[in-house]
Image 1 (spheres, rainbow, N blue to C red):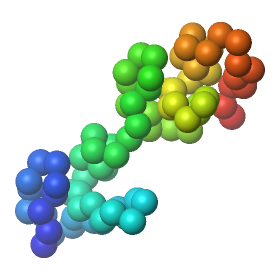
Image 2 (tube, helix red, strand yellow):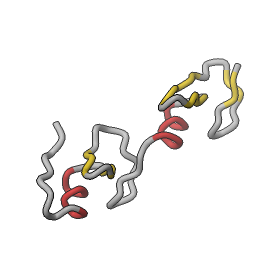
Image 3 (cartoon, one colour):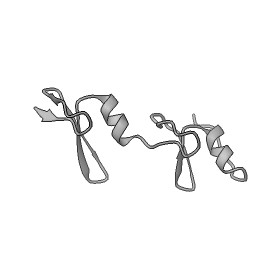
Image 4 (tube, rainbow, N blue to C red):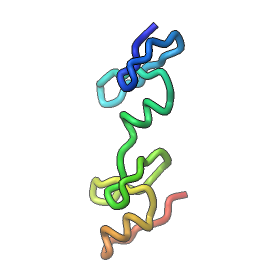
Length: 78
């Protein structure tokens, strides 16, 4: 069993995620999203889908990206 790094739950079905060389242990996708999902630079929502990246900044959608980068050509994600 392993302890979730977000909630501290010691769970026999925990799992690990390795991202950018760092290993993380979680007991649920909810905790993994809480710790690892980027946050939209415009509205603050967690980006759990494809999202949009403009100039290295994450956005939940093209609408939010356009609101921050009015002069950039931002395409809607598929």
